[in-house]
Length: 256
Image (cartoon, rainbow, N blue to C red; front, side, top):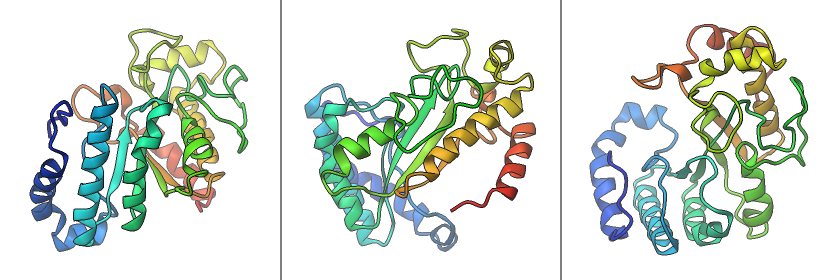
């Protein structure tokens, strides 16, 4: 679907239109059996506070309408580093509505040239470890949101990382400037001591993030981008060696 145009959005009408289009798909018996929740628009960006409030109103109404039909909403699905910290208090009505309908919050967290960059474990080598007090501005940013906004407001909603990984499109980072997905960083990792075999080096970083998520009871899990990548996103593809190593990791490390 095209992105929401927030400048002059009629939030309630847009939410009703969204639900009307989704309903024939989501109400299929097989999808009801296998789909846990439904997102809306991918990585919405509000240009100002008024637009952000319209986005919040849209998510409130969408969540309410789907909840009345027995469908869970996954709200937000904001891109890495979004929204600005001062905006989050204005999203609390959407958080509250989602909690009322057993909903989840979705966030995207990426970093580069390693998944540790801009976290409190950056510049600590190949095996930096992670503790519950660690945070970040790209990955582990979610902890700042929960510790500073959601927990004090009594709104520690279940969280799922609807996208995560290494992504060279994050701004103001070191490393190869034209790199996109993890595959483009393999040479950088080898030169800087993060492992000479790219797939293994990437899985080590994903395991670090998995261990962090498991330290937070409100985190349900995360989705690595991408398996069966669409055209233009092939450098993010984890099928093959990465998938195989991840399978080994998950087979010997029970997930909570």
